Length: 114
Image 1 (cartoon, helix red, strand yellow):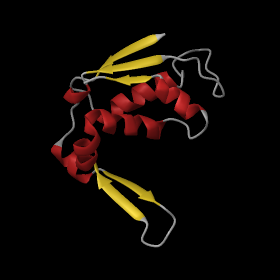
Image 2: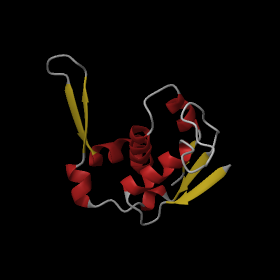
Image 3: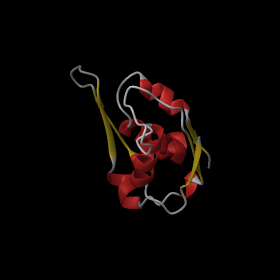
Image 4: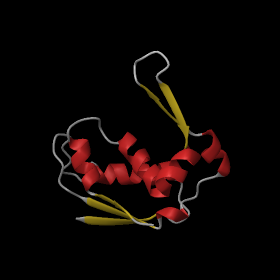
C-alpha cells in the first residue's frame, strides 16, 4: 500500500514520527514487530517544511567513535547545506525506526521528493 504525505507547513519531527509509524506498520491492526508488510511512504514538498532558524542553529547531531577526541557534532543547518532538507528528514526518520535488520528494509520503502 502506498501512502502520500504532504510536508508543506509541517514540523520536521511531527512529520518524521508520522512517516516512521507508517513504515513500521504500527497503523495497522495486523502489526507484528518482527515483520515488515512493505508499506511505501512518499513524502512530497519536503523543501517546504516549517523549520525555524532557531531550530537550524541549535539542533545538534552528535556521534561518538569511542576513541579519545572522537566526539563529532554537526548542526541541522550544516546537514541541510550538505544533504538538503530531504537528507535531514531522512536522518530524522532513520532515528525513529528500530535499530535492527528491518531498518534498512523500511528505509527502502521511503521516497522523499522536493
